[in-house]
Image (cartoon, rainbow, N blue to C red; front, top):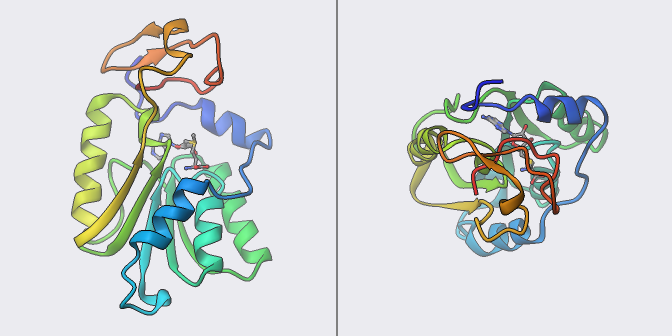
Length: 182
Ligand SMILES: C[S@@+](CC[C@H](N)C(=O)[O-])C[C@H]1O[C@@H](n2cnc3c(N)ncnc32)[C@H](O)[C@@H]1O
């Protein structure tokens, strides 16, 4: 397997076998409420999540009345998110694709969320993604960035790959996440 994948297929494998996250991460909830532009009506506040997985963070934001978009390279994850939104009568714009090429116009979003997704790529893809996020964020928009640290207990159990990646983690809570940049 190449050691500089833009998207580790382990994620598609997990989601196609039924892996899902149903509820939002507490830090994302705090970020959204603290940083959304309070002068705008919520339906005009645009929120993007890169690597949105099964859409739990955006599900919370949509229920709170925000206008949400998500992109994930896993087709199965996007399908799950779309189905869940439809079942709950929520609106969300979900795309299957890689987040280092965002299919959105410049200066479009008020908030962008990365909850543990960019960290799944090497440094060169991460740099391209952050540049893309900057492009699609409005001036004064806010970016929630949640990578993992190299102090994580799993770090020492992996082996170094190229582009800053750690591979084959064999101990701790990060077992099974595939390539990761700590
Ligand atoms: C740890 S999960 C986080 C999912 C979601 N953000 C959450 O908080 O539940 C990482 C996600 O990043 C996605 N991902 C990894 N590399 C990607 C890429 N290059 N482009 C788009 N999505 C990617 C995976 O498919 C997976 O859904």
